[in-house]
Image 1 (spheres, rainbow, N blue to C red):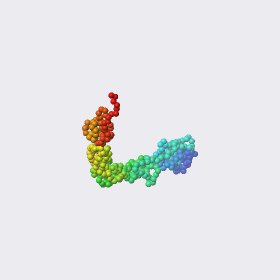
Image 2 (image 1 turned 45 degrees about the horizontal axis):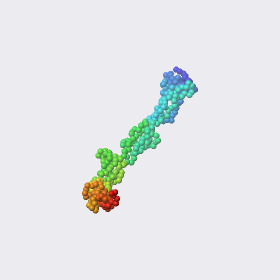
Image 3 (image 1 turned 30 degrees about the vertical axis):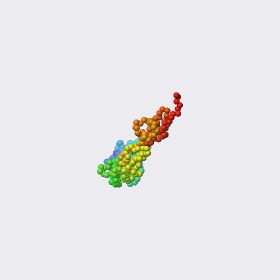
Image 4 (image 1 turned 90 degrees about the vertical axis):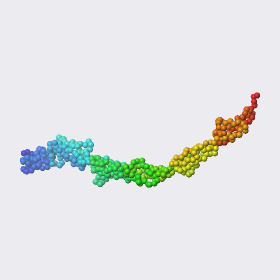
Length: 382
């Protein structure tokens, strides 16, 4: 039985043992006993060189100690040289990137100043990314308190703005940097077809029903209207916004027709508004004659007959007085009795006479100077 302690001294009364360590060494065991005439633990492991145990305020870290020789001390202030301390973080925390996961108590070859090979890291919180939902809001809570960091066990509660509804989950929790549920989509409330005001029209939609046979249309759907009475129409549109139809009440009006001008004449309408059911007639200016349809009616935006023409009247040859002389026309017209507008008439005078004046056919009448044949005033060479 050994009666002394390496790097220290012992004192025994036969049943118990007390000991002290030399300067620079620490007491590995607070108390020891003798069992079957042997010291427990063995005296050579009572006084050791070691590193001071660090106390951390980091609630997220856990430290485990182990020794390659299996040495275990009850001293709460020191750990022997070659002790390995391993670091783990509790759930929701992690060791920062680049920080060591363990360190070793190193001997510096002296009695004092043993140190750990690397400092104890500080566990950092594993955060979840912020959530954003369109047309809605997200509220983060932890223990019913609003927090600034999205850490472990944070709860995100989703609400949609008025006129929108959630596609699925109402909430989600942060677990190891990942949200347990995907955020919902805030979908615009559909509109009921039956909420469109009844009238002399029918609605036509640019999107299908939200569900076949449901009678609802998705948000953003545009409703246009067809009037049920022939010859009537409306340009009003309504849009489904936030569950309601937005827009003016449809009003069916007679479909208008485009007004037209008649060259060398005028158009007369049966009413001040040129619209479905309006009749029109035509009057040509003096000297012009109507060619084509004499009247037409506006029928659902289209005229029943094309616009006629006002044709300039020809001139009668009988209205010219040649005073017995022959008439000559240019351009030459074969028609013996009527000459086209723009025709110029002169007299064909015999030898020794010169014609004077000309007339032009305009709007059914000959206009111009008096026609005559006058003796030539030229002096003959013979």
